[in-house]
Image (cartoon, rainbow, N blue to C red):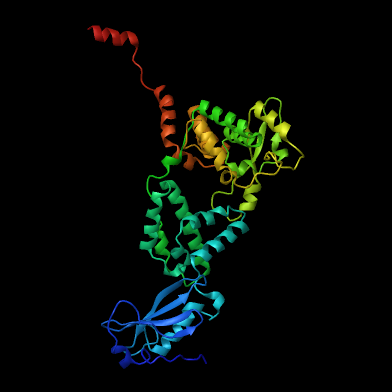
Length: 410
């Protein structure tokens, strides 16, 4: 039987009613290492409050139940002093009473999410990006105690540091981590906290679609080659194919089909789309045409049939997500071409728009860029309208010139 802790100022109803009503709880007994029970005196039934250590030097608190100051205990919402001790310890340690099953903090949620991403061969940076911006208080707080108000304050505070589109990406990553935690811990029942508090900001997508002219793309590529040959070849592939950087770095030598007239790359697919079987999806290939000039450069750089096609200057493979490791090079290129907002993804956006304006069918544009028609229409609707203007203008009713002239003279 669990040992009961005595505390003369709190254990009896008469002793508690002698205390002055106040917002700050009265300190109570220590129930175990890092766990104590406090009491808040109200004008009606008081409140039992759990105070527990998060294991990193901070504490969290949670109301356990009402005290039996005026009403008898019902074993659930109204508890005696000794009943509150049992409930507080179970809450602090988990339903089984093991210290290993204490309420999971946001910090631990992100660590679990990172392990899950790695197990699914997804980008672990999605678990790190929220951590960079979260406060120590939020990181130490149990996920089940998060509120919509505090998450919204944190989200809105990010606008002083990063662009709205970046805020949305960070919030989506944190929401995914919390959702994963809720799926594995039945105590986390406050899903509405992050659904409401981390809701996406409106009109944030358009700002990220940096479109470069063909001359700017050429300058982009030539500047990259001037800075670093290996980086230049990667940028060249991105500019010609419009693929994502994470796909390009997974190319192997045998993916290059060096046809003398119609060279192409068998591009690895992205793992996007919500599929759980990401490894199988990313192993699939699709054909992307390239220029003979790029094919010649790739052939010269190729080494071994199963080796990575694109390598860094030191001969090592590129990391899975090269954009996260080339910020300085990208900043120099963006400054050199006079487009400080340009990123690697600007080459993808520019490739898609270039094809749309060349009257390439949207279905084919989507296939060549490993995306969907719906996403093309959603993201590039402005350019689709410009594209359709040229097509629809040819179908306008035209009056014979002679008839128009005669009517004007009359």
